[in-house]
Image (tube, helix red, strand yellow):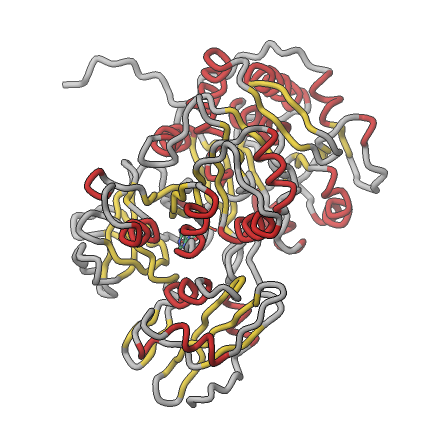
Amino acid sequence: MQGLMMDTPLLISSLIQHAERHHGDTEIVSRLVEGGIHRYDYRGAHRRARKLANALGALGVEKSDRIGTLAWNGFRHLEAFYGISGMGAVMHTINPRLFPEQITYIVNHAEDSYVLFDLTFAPLIEKLAPMCKSVKGWIVMTDRAHMPQAGIPNLLCYEDLVNAQPDDYEWPELDERTASSLCYTSGTTGNPKGVLYSHRSTVLHAYAAALPDALNISSRDVMLPVVPMFHANAWALPYSCALVGTKMVLPGYQLDGKSLFELFETERVTVSAGVPTVWLALLQHMSQNKLKFSTMNRTVIGGSACPPAMIRSFQEDFGVQVLHAWGMTEMSPLGTVSTFKSKHLDLPKDSKLAIQSKQGRSIFGVDLKIVDDAGKELPWDGKAFGNLLVRGPWISNGYFKGEGGDPLRKDEKGRDWFPTGDVATIDPDGYMQITDRSKDVIKSGGEWISSIDLENAAVAHPAVAEAAVIGIRHPKWDERPLLLVVKKKDTQVTREELLKFFEGKVAKWSMPDDVVFVEQLPHTATGKLLKTKLREDFKDYKLPTA
Ligand code: AMP
């Protein structure tokens, strides 16, 4: 017997419609690439998203066409999120920090028919355009007064296109499984692979991500997503914020500590989200200038492991609660968030910090398990570690155009699981902790050493700004850990002092064999440590213990 419930499709257009109807005067504030601040509200955003849909229709864009964007977090990019997906086309966010050859590859692979871009990227587009054969027009997201003088073929002005259109547009009632957006993972090896979201997966994820034990956002919040809209759709915040009517503050390209702090204060931001590397810069700026937040009370940190020292500093020095989260582009992206259960509330500070340092419990909709190399499920005892597999309605079941083959693994009941490539433990309360990416774990004499544990321990030292640990070949132990350290400005620390600092904090056999001080560490386009490059750079390094 079937239930007697309406079968209304879950559509991205319904999110912005809801936001307009119930939070029409809630502000959306953007720091512009052209300079200055732009303000309007959900009513204005919805109106212009409809005009954009009309404009793209007039250019001949049809359902399923891919429309690329190379843009920072700003109001026009938000309009594109809704206008493009809402009309049934596919919103394709491109990470501008990738190498130009990768961007060209991605545009060609996606067969983008138009690309919208911020002024900042005009020189880049000028270089790429001749290689991007599918692109019929390059739409610069600015007004007539700021049009670049670049030699870009078929250059169109966003404001001209939008202003020429009426705002009466009826969002089509699409099948909820229709593709809505596309985001390529910045894999460190092989070609980038396209993750293709649907309307259904996006709306379900937006619900789950907004919940109190997840990102915990509401209509009383002011959210400033530092995480860029090209990194897994800014962790889907443009959708969750519309779903609950959160004021959004979009910071543009100025992500340095000073600019961010200014915006946090002037816009009375209560909650934010970003990767550990951006917080490093903000916290340093605030410490150096003895600044405090007036309204900010929590932040989501994910994308890489958040070191306990950073969680402590945010909470104890700046009064900001950290929500440590884990996910991946293939998971829309949210998988787990570390929030307390009521039984944890009265625990001592250090025990609470240990819980928050884990990546957390899965949000409803994400099923997790850890397995050994033979695929056998491992216990949730907080000790056994294994390959982390996931399944759920907002988790990929393949890549765009079948790139890379079938990624899924079947269990004994024939159900599909997506292998995350992460190694993790899960404790009896369901808190998952990432040990490492499976490729980064250091295999020493049959034991596994977590590079994340060593990095977390190293950054707790007051002179360490950033740390990376990689495995170096060793004649006796296969691999041993090498610690690479960027010192904080105007601080001193020696190799011996650092090694001593590890004593009592990690098992003796897992202590790094050596320390190298470096000026900076390489990062991926989404701010993660680029360990493939470090392993390449240090492949001939001779450890003193070898
Ligand atoms: P991406 O799809 O580029 O965001 O990368 C996803 C990967 O980032 C995950 O598979 C993890 O390896 C890593 N990651 C994301 N969040 C965390 C976290 N909180 N702690 C450790 N690793 C993380």
